[in-house]
Image (cartoon, rainbow, N blue to C red; front, side):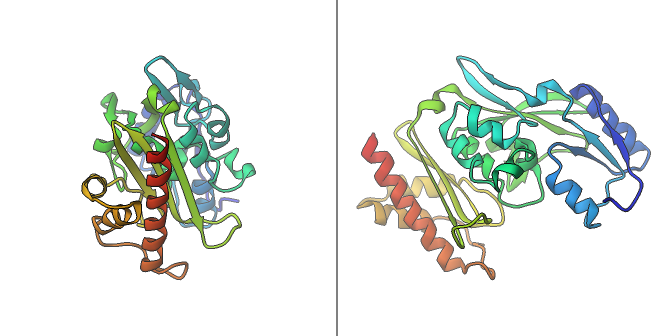
Length: 278
């Protein structure tokens, strides 16, 4: 139960949602967009966050749509992870979405909530990073489409009043050779020590990771080091890890060295599997 009064709004369109945020902000209500709500509502109940207005996006049809054309796969920000598991048309995305939490929780977690939420893992974003995906963003200045590589740096760089409308990937990635690996502290449902998504495209391996840092990462420097390194998969995987920036997480769940070793092993597995199937 939320222990304070809060304004609840349910717009019917993206334009109405943006306008509602502006109005609530002008009234000093500290508005927040509500998608799945699993993180935001829990934080409000525990007084870790105190938005004065919640703008519920679930009635907006555009945000709940999965659209597949000849050119692209587009996923509305209110699509649940459960739907992505079944209907994404992109195997790597279905795999990543299917390992977040349990089935009951995936029925409420949305793509936008996973990508824009407070937890650092944002695992559903990894397949879209390696797919060279794009983001459609709406705000007071209108709607724009941006490459993910431009608007995502540790987190999605939204301006005040902006909301994520959808994420898209080229249709060609749906059938591309891919590799997925997740490592937890134990075999039960847990946050990842490592999640790795890899895609074979344009005669290169694209790799995005989560759990190793306090944010998801796709490093062009590390990918280039992997491509330039000679030798067997283990040597090339080591080159990938060595090229990454400092700041690997070390906490009570796993030391930095252990996370790096998990990453090296997973990259070597990806090389063997994807280059072996090429």
